[in-house]
Image 1 (tube, rainbow, N blue to C red):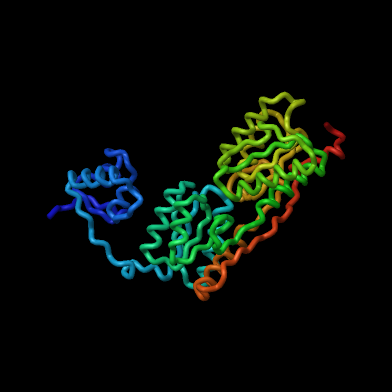
Image 2 (cartoon, helix red, strand yellow; image 1 turned 45 degrees about the vertical axis):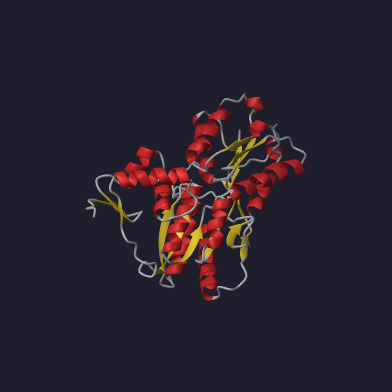
Length: 357
């Protein structure tokens, strides 16, 4: 009845003139909401559903007949869901997963959520309808909607360096609490008392655990933690630069003697600013971090002392865990926890030796 000239491939729809994105913008909803209405899902209000259907009827919308999931079957393909690809650790996980699965003749498809939980859920819905052999979730934000989708999935899901507290799933992770505790204790043992922390997003279980390790190590040694000691960022280089600017504005006698950063990228951003302003690392400010793979992906002024993981090994382990899950779908869920490894470089000074502060 309707002739279509524009195709929205992602949503499986053909419309005349306007795309679904155009319509979504006009009526103030997301394309994901329109997709839910078209697929008859019940998590859309009656008012919104009526608004969407009215707009589609106005534009002479005609939904394309979907092929069955059998026709779409991706039996030799796995889906990797990641927040973004700027984090070197994420790239390491993906490299490990790909290399191990390639040995078994499996392909990998990557989908990015930009750390948006609603997008994660939409990707899982897509995966459920398109028959992947398995799913790896590298960045999972726990909430009721995600839990609902995960527990309904028949496709095996492996969580990498993430997990859901309320759901028993296959997990490969590093001991993130110990990453934070040991890094902070390393600084304390070298005489540091004013220790700041560049934390990651509060929505990340990984970052929560590392920050809790920092808090507990400080408290175990009866050290104060003032509000301005903790700076919450987004794991990225730019965030580290922002914190570096804050340190530069502090009087020298009030400045932190050391900083523990959740990621090497944020540590690198901070150090670049400090050095630009003549604040020496480690003589003026010592730096320790988790996951210093920044030097592998971007110029970095120094190698940091770290408590870190081996993301490629963890990726390969996660891939092997998926293969086990496919072969033995009824086996109990497994949680494989790697200990953090200390790598010492020249970014931390001992105040005992220097007889400072």
